[in-house]
Amino acid sequence: MTHRLNTPVLLSILMGLILMGACSNSLWDELPSPIARFIAEYFPGSGIKSYDIGNDSTYHVRIDNSVSLVFNQALDWTVVDVNGGTLPEVFVQDQLPPALFRYIQEGEDAGNVFRVSRDSTYYKVTLHDTVLTYEIETGRITYPDGTTRDT
Image: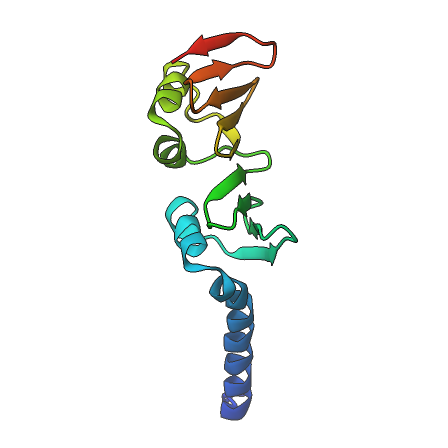
């Protein structure tokens, strides 16, 4: 017995798959282009799990691989948290101040960054076993116990 493909049924299935794909892309399409470019550059091939704008006009994005991102009103990232994984080293190199990156690299921790947050005065970097706070104005790095190091 041979099976013949039923063209209308096959077309219906194909259209359903296309529509499902279009729905999952709708969040991607809603993202402001600077945020979409950021995700495409540092987390290529990722889908968008959720996206919303907070009451304070911050953009909160969760991508499929559990990464949480927060962007301010100017669309600059303020928090990048991989929620248990490590950030891509290219992000650490590109997005941290050079002196902070060198310090992290000297400690052989460029591949051990789990979370980064920033504002206009500091960067806070969560490593496997500690948290570094980098003061932008002074270049000083502070550990949780109060120990400091000038870069």
